[in-house]
Length: 77
Image 1 (spheres, rainbow, N blue to C red):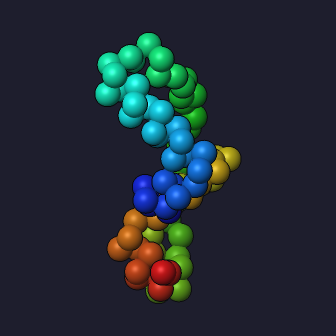
Image 2: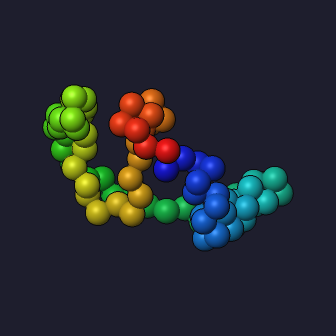
């Protein structure tokens, strides 16, 4: 999923629009700051058909990310 795909999702698009409006008005106090909880990152190598790639374990995130080059190589659209 890419940034453009996220902007098609209403909740993400609205949050980004609110943030940009606040930044333009220089009202940083109205921008909500979220705390990021640090979690350990587990990585391993996996094989998808003929391709060996480094992957991270899913830690409960709602979105998975794949670079375009890998998506093309695996035949995704």
